[in-house]
Image 1: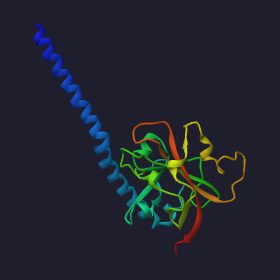
Image 2 (image 1 turned 90 degrees about the vertical axis):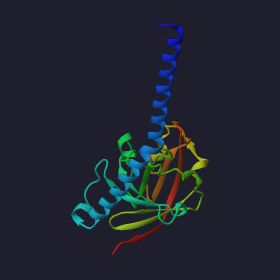
Image 3 (image 1 turned 135 degrees about the vertical axis):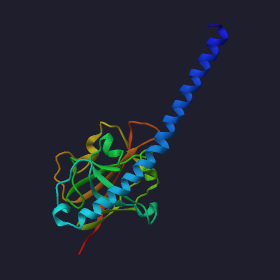
Image 4 (image 1 turned 180 degrees about the horizontal axis):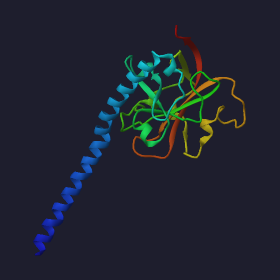
Length: 210
């Protein structure tokens, strides 16, 4: 092969590689969002259907299934997302995930959840815009819990090893929890980062469903 041929072949290979990379990036930032949003819509409908049957509504949470609905008024009147059990790669690709080792909504202790800021529907894309006093509403089969943020997630960044944020009483290991709290976690940066932005919230209101 001539030198010109080698250069031409190398150029074609680089072009193909570039197009492949663009396609992958496009899928991550657009394609996964379309898929995840469809999945979240279906999970929300499935959860509401389960709530209509007491036998299924009280069932033990299973990994990957929706367990609650989350609303953040500051994100808009129509913003509502399902929270699924688990925070693995597959679960977070389906929406917001619940750390299984933490409590459920309304229970004394820490109801801790995580969500992506980018890709897979980006449910927590605007999380760092929240401020102290903003409300987060969690709906379960039998109640609606309203939590109020103690601070903004942009003000607290932790390492993956800082698991104290998931403790029943964050920062106080061994302490017995007496009050329900909510912990929100997400990536600190819009692009991949091991650091996490965290916000805590306390329960201010419980409305039991009829």
